[in-house]
Length: 150
Image 1 (tube, rainbow, N blue to C red):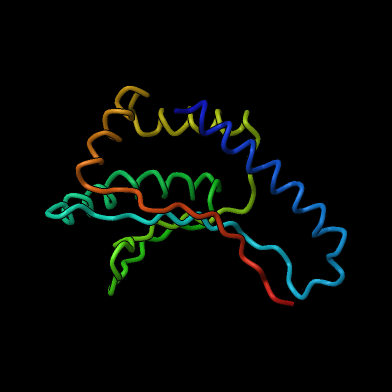
Image 2 (cartoon, rainbow, N blue to C red; image 1 turned 180 degrees about the horizontal axis):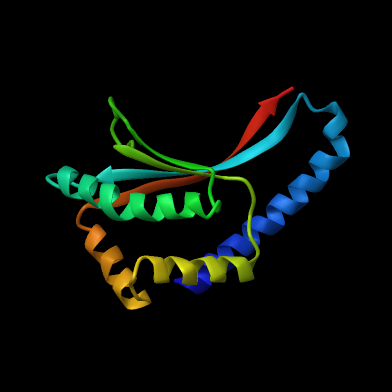
């Protein structure tokens, strides 16, 4: 799991780097500057699991996010509820805001710090992920960049 995350982050980093070269070359013409990245995960909560999933978010997810914010790995995090979801839309959006992509080495270092902070093991994290399958389904995952208008 850790390996695939590094590959994904590496591919995204290369794409962002290429895009940033174009932005730098044309930055004088742009009416905005690049801001923070927003990672938005759309979550469908399974029937009868709303309270269980809310407890998970309030306990484990929030604990990790607060830790990441304290370490300045992220800028902010939010949970938004879709009050009037249309068919097929997520019930919740989990949002993580961050400034920069990190190197693979930094990603590994942070992952190890996270595992130590959560007082768990990779095996236990995998089991916890499996337990969440009955509570929720990942419907979408987006990476957005904030544009700050000049």
